[in-house]
Length: 128
Image 1 (cartoon, rainbow, N blue to C red):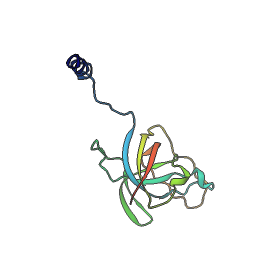
Image 2 (cartoon, one colour):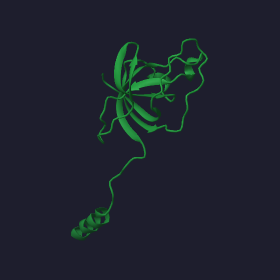
Image 3 (cartoon, helix red, strand yellow):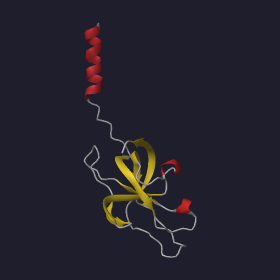
Image 4 (cartoon, rainbow, N blue to C red):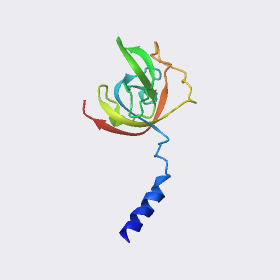
């Protein structure tokens, strides 16, 4: 009886494809905020995702921000307020936001970067 149970489990699971999420996964460090809008809540935040992630992917573009060079930087408007602290490290689940456009800036001397954008699904704080 037990043998039949294990055989049925084996054959029912044998043809299943591995789970492939519809989102991306990465670990990154918050590096700062763009300066474009007079209302800071409307500015994008920059995240350094050095990668590669568990699927051997890298994300983002190379930039210089506040005099420091970074590789694999993305930006997002969906960073929770609690995570808006430069230097903090997080594990991210996110979607690549391919159809978004940069907003018109309304500050003097804006700091806007034309880099990849993401939309955060979930994040968890990790140790630095």
